[in-house]
Length: 563
Image 1: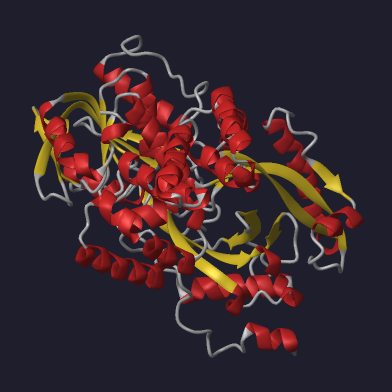
Image 2 (image 1 turned 135 degrees about the horizontal axis):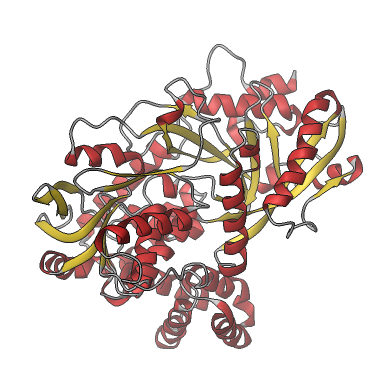
């Protein structure tokens, strides 16, 4: 399998191969943990397959805070190993995967009435720099009051003594997950979405594969493998019980909600973290992609791990916290441009009454007597390390050290990159300097693949005499449909066309403007396309619009600001 067959048209062929071939490893789950394990296994020369019940990155890995970070706040719970690993993984990705992971300065304002917290911050800052290997001293520093206000003029000034500026990193979580997965496919792995596992195959009490069904084509498929990894995030316990029905839970779901504001509406110039005046919970306003991403709530929710809808209580908590911290900014509900929620599958070993904010973001790997390997917990930042440990566990069971190549993910960039991509980008910019920003964005998203995409766009402009910007957009849609296993309009818009991240109206216009190209690439008739458009519009209403109306118990935030 290669990227040329990583598309909806090739699904019947892929399922035939999955049922006929024998694999070293079968991975269940197409989030960042499953994708990272898949990529690592393929690079080691393993015969590896991955199946996902819905679409890739449709769970927690596509609804995160979009940060690759060391976890400064985890110092408070003394989770020093997690912070150390996270800081080193962040530094590795900034160096190795710079086209996808970009540095993001964070500012924490400091206030005199919270003297104890200021002292904690200074001690924590010193420790955080140490965890990073003292490699970011130029980016980690304390600021004067004047310097702090120049970066964040909208901050409350009463009691402000200064600020702490440090560096973490931002990433488009869906693009990161899909690019990681594609790298596994590029190196010989086989992956397919919309293929839920319904049962495990067993021989002499040992798990030797799984039965999955094709939700698009309807056929069932038995996949045989020497080892099976359950990396299904919030569904990890449901899949475990397909093996042993009486197992207790490994994870519990915590829901986090994020609000999006236009950059021009927020009186800050830098990502700013602060503590909610309501309960002291850490919150942030992260400057990303022309917007400020505000979050996040963190509350237990006992429900099925489907896509969570933003709740009115979560939205009002975030808006109330923001109003109490910066009332004159007038960041009311009317200014919210977009909203989304996601589930974090957190380990339950801290007990059912634990505050989800304080629960460890560490990882647990379980091997049942039947040999099923399940991985629970974890975070976006440390997924590469989690994959390494999962594979070490699997290799010990099916071959032992020396059977496969050693891990290479610490030295090979995800999806390629480096000097070759930079030279190809420069080639196109020299020819079309007017479109430099558009071309650079494509290379950041797709790496070396962007060269073919640009070639197709230029050929299209010559054949049809269309504007290069329109040609690049059409070529990008074709690229996504042909090489990224797009099966539905929601796959295309929500998790592949990442440039449309924060604008529902723009997403719908995009579908209409490119309807013919999309229909041709996905083999849709007009009726099917219209039905999926309606489904997607309902999806936006349910999952990306503010719920209900403001609570009648409080006056609207805007009214309180004016009074």
